[in-house]
Amino acid sequence: MTTQESSHAKSFVDDKVFRHYCRPKFLGSLNKTLSAEEKFIIESTLFGWLIVLDGKLKLSRCPLRELCSRWVERTHGFVVSSRVVPFSLLDVCLGIGLRVVGDKFDLEKIENNCKSRSFFKSSHVTVKMIYDEIVKHRNECSIDDFCRLYILLGMSEFLFPSRMGLVLGGLFRVVDDLGELGRFNWGGLVYDFLIQSLCSASMCMRRKTNATYIHVRGCVYLMQIWALEHLFSYKRQMPRIGNRYPRIRHWMVVRLGDIEIASGLQQNVVIVDLSASNEELEKEFVVQAFEVVRRGFTSDM
Image (tube, rainbow, N blue to C red; front, side):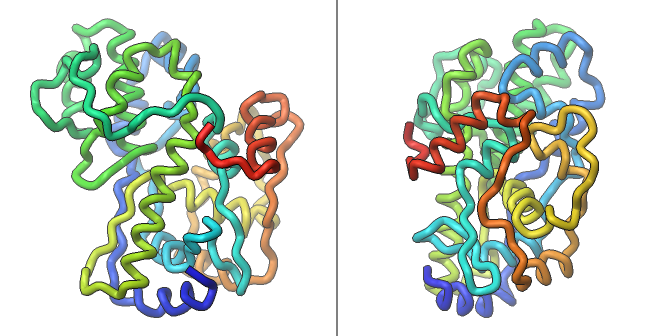
């Protein structure tokens, strides 16, 4: 989609309702009850920051609509004041602290013969079923099983949320071995999953279908972090106290209003290329992400 096409698409979406499923409601509820031992095990993985998520955290519909209408498929970026600002793997790495190199796997592949899948008898598992299983057997299951299900819930409700709350089949086997989670290209998987949905939404707008609703799956909250980093960080220099990596820890307390996002997308002041703090550059994942983006690599590594 060109910049002009994006402008046309924007005018078409005024009567459309955009929906997403990235709301850590169940995860936020569990976060209020985590024991010190459970937190220790979860924080030892790449997904340790999940424990700080609030159940009320979400991207509102207006920013979702504004950003989707400005998405440019060919360059994977958003139109801001007649220029395209990229949304890259670096935004994912800095935003939610996931590595952008490593192994990938098929998210959609059905995995039945694994420990985490054995908790569920239904052919389709939803995030609500994971939450109910955790609550029902909290005092019976081992702490390792609890952490497996907790991370599976976090992945399914926040990182790879889909319509109807269905859990992707490929996630079950990887959470069986918590020690092996670090070898996967999680940032690339999250990025690709969201990008595919944004491109599908863009195609829907371009074709001007009669559909009332446009559904966007994936970690759409990354779009809010992108907006805050690229459009508003220059005037939102909040003190970064303590460990604020990944940056979602810093931005999750900030509410981005409808009027603010609309005006921000029209402004001339925009940060195209992100930089990292010295603290962030001490992390191997961050350095790798800068190398990937600098060399123009794809996320298929």
